[in-house]
Length: 121
Image (cartoon, rainbow, N blue to C red; front, side, top):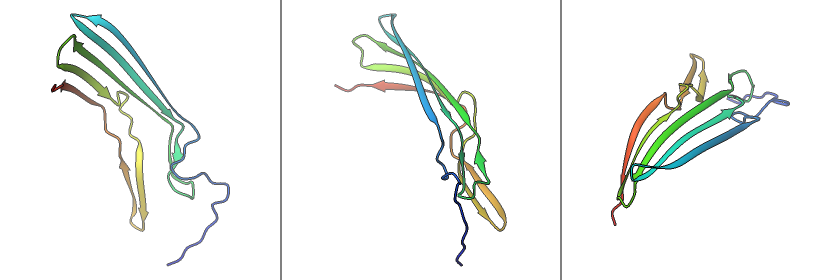
């Protein structure tokens, strides 16, 4: 089946007009090691999901943070982190059919975790 249409003047799918990232890290000495505090954020102005520009992902902001402690002369570091602190759902894929449309929110929800890194010399 061949279809035709005119998308003149429409925006490209998944192409936002603006996106930006900012990350700040503060490091200080603490308890015989280094403590690093990090906060990172991003903004996206949103994007259209299909060439016909009917469905749109609205603008969104994402925020993450972490704290890392690295003892001096130690083989390990400990890091606690959080991602998507604002718990924003971002559309990553959408498919339309005669039965409706299926949307995939491909980013992770608000997530917390820890990482232990060990260096083997």
